[in-house]
Length: 122
Image 1 (tube, helix red, strand yellow):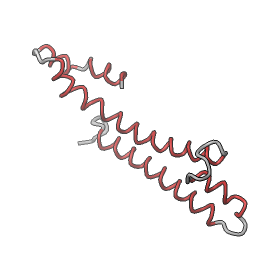
Image 2 (spheres, one colour):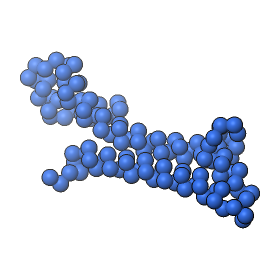
Image 3 (cartoon, one colour):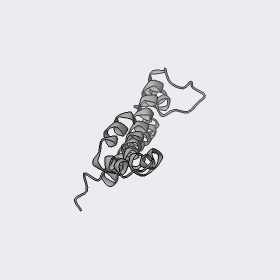
Image 4 (tube, one colour):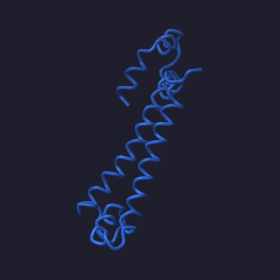
């Protein structure tokens, strides 16, 4: 966030607003925050997918949430012993994990494409 704000602060439209006498709070509200929020929202949506994957990985190794609490990683680990007899025990939580992470990445990519003015071809 700090890097985005420092970059936006030096843009021509912010300098022009400052030269026209706009107060700092108005410059921040109308120019800096809308332009800095877009990359933060996209990064947050991609980071949530990584956090889910990290939690599932740690739970698979036994280092995440403890067994009374449900976790896709611990469900995959518990079904590992039954892979030959009942593969759906592993594939169900694995598919749910895959679809969730893929969906969050697609949403983050779509948000980046929709909100980034430099990528639009209009």
